[in-house]
Every structure is written in C-alpha cells, then in structure tokens.
Picture 1 (cartoon, rainbow, N blue to C red):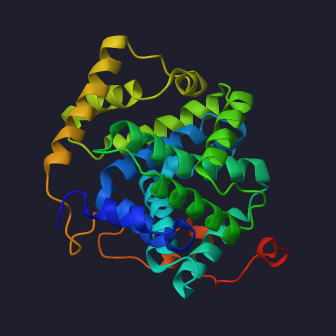
Picture 2: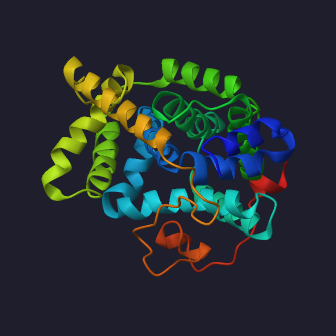
Length: 293
C-alpha cells in the first residue's frame, strides 16, 4: 500500500455516508499518534473554562484516578466509533456516557464546547504537526462524528461542519476563558498523568515541552507562565521534524491499527468498567435526556 493510497480513497468517498469509515482510517491508520495528542490538548482547553474545571475539581476524579479518567474518556469514544455509532455496543457506550454525565447539571453550552474541543483540537493539531494536512473530506468526517455524538447524547444545536465547530470554540473561549484556581489544579493533575507515561528523568522536560505547545490565552486561563520563544520554536520544529520522518515511512497496514493501550486495563475491560465507581454495576438504560428528543 502506498503512503497516499488511503488519502486518494478518502477523497473519492462521500463524508455524509462514509464518515465513520473515514474517521476510523484517520484515527487508527493515518494519524493515530497525532489524533491522540490533539485529544489531549482538547482536555486541557476544557479546563480554561472555570465552570467546567470547578465541576471536575469537585469530583476529584483527576486527582484520585487521573489515568483511569483519561483512559475511560478515550475508550468510550473508541467504543462508539470503532463499533459503529448505531451498533448495539456503540449505543450502549453512549447510554453509559449519558448516565455518567446525567448525575451533574451541565449546561448545553458547556456540552457543545467540550464537543467542539474534541473535533477542532485534533483537526488543528494534525494540520499543524501531522505528516500531511487533513483533506476536506476528513474535516467533514470529524465534524459529522461530532454531530452524531451530540445526537446520541441529546445535545441540541450542535454544528455539522468543521467551520461551525471552529466558530463555536473560538467564540466560547473568547467569552468564557478566565483564570480560576480549579483550572490550575485540574490541569496539574492531567499533566501529572501525561508525564507519567515517560521515564522519571524526562518528566520535567516533557512538562515544559507540553506547555510550549499551548497558546497564550489557554496558558493564562490555566495559570501557567508563557514559555520563552526559544522553547516554543524548539517544540514546534521538533514536531515538524517528526512529521517529515513519518511522511517517509510506509503506510500502516490494515492488520496493524494504531490503537493506544489503556494503562488502566492491562487485562481488558467491559463497558461497565468505564467511568467512576458509582456508575458501575448498574443496568444500562437511556436517560430522560435522550427520551425527550
């Protein structure tokens, strides 16, 4: 398989019909590492909104079970996308996610913003640091995956296009980004999880490198200092160098999807394992939020 074989196929596909297949190729074969990094940045952007970070801070999920919280979020998204959003397991994952969120009073505006970070964040990361930029059909597929997820979660008025999600994200951050101590606490807990993936001697450098990739409005909202220009330039060039190397590698074969191994579940998991302890060992059922649509 040639390096651009899947891209040529994706360009011939219809995103409205084939968005799930395009999404699987994008996240598991074309850009598995980059997509994961974009999702990690999306988590951090959520914490720039005090109303969101204060809720997360109260639950103490990141402080006590940061790695599990990260893995559960990724795995619930994977279960819906990999098995098909309309499959029995995909819908069961959506119901489980709704049940977890249903315990809290979360405004629809915040739901839409968090959804926008998961659509826009990976897209912008790949365009900047991927081995090639996303094509129009890939961007359309990312947006339609976000819209389908909103439908399953009962989130009204979600955009259907990447441009719509970008406007939603940029407008919401301009209005809602502000520093709060909860922002810093939750972000610190998340950085500790991310740093733990590397040898102890490298963790301080990894933390500085990660901060150098964040924009100034987000750093201010999280309570972190803006990193010096030389470090930001170094981080950018390092990732662009990686992109150059990846571009020269052969395409990932169909038999080797790029799936990250959840550290919290070395021996496998069930849907019921995902989420906080209080959400486990109960029968799956739709919430009224879904029934009223």
